Amino acid sequence: MKKCLLAAAMVVLGTASVQAADLAAQYTKAPVMAPGYNWTGFYVGANIGGQWGSADPTTSTVFAPTGYFAASSVPAIAAVGAQNVNSSSVTGGFTAGYNWQVNQAVFGLEGDINYFGFKGSATGSALYPCCAPFAFTVSSQVSADWLATIRGRIGFLATPHWLLYATGGVAIADVKGNFNLTDTFSATESGAIHDTRVGWTAGVGGEYAVGNGWSLKAEYLYVDLGRSTATSTNLVLGATSYPSNVYTHSVDLKSNIVRVGVNYKFGGPVVARY
Picture 1 (spheres, rainbow, N blue to C red):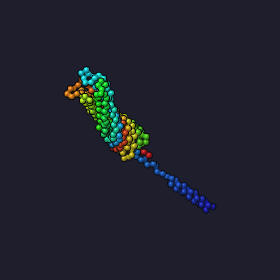
Picture 2: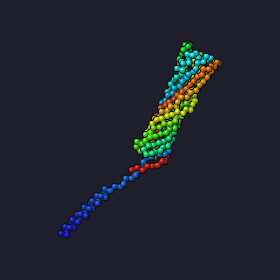
Picture 3: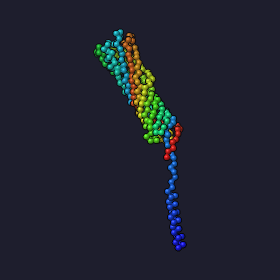
Picture 4: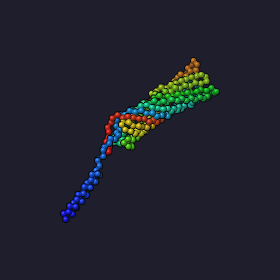
């Protein structure tokens, strides 16, 4: 009997040992916290892309009894002087800004300066209504070498690393225009615009944080620099001038910009994530 009880006890102890070993094998450590990306901080970057823009230069004058033109010539000059200039070019430059992340929202302020490369010209001719076959020609040239913007950004995080945003603010560019009128009588007139324009810009974009402070972005901006205007009174025919024929020249410049870029963020807090 004692031998039977001893054998039963050994079986029970052996079973308990196996179950304890199984429990030990199933033990796992608690998950380790890994650092996640946080968008708060100052950043700098560079971008490159393309711009597709248009300008609407105009040339017009007024009728004056002591002037050079017949009354019928004034509307004819305005019609030919209403021209269109298209331009496309590579654009690129540098960016700096600061972001604040609040939960899934990101707010920021960004500035950039870029080579703009807007340049184009247009020419039109017509007969004088009063004096055919004599004719006149109006020429316009428009350019803007650089563009700067100061914009706010507001976005949300589609994932901790994907930021989708809208942006808008001030656009600044150095707009230049040159205008000329000539005719078959050898009359000439010229005018020029050189104006640092302050307009507006708005757009959308996306930015992806690749880690270690680096991020890649792509964005679209629409730029409207408004209309610049200048007048001239320098119409001459030979040695005779006609200051009573006041000329008005203007240019209205708009552009669409698509670009990609890379940013580097300095410092900023790290968020712990499981």
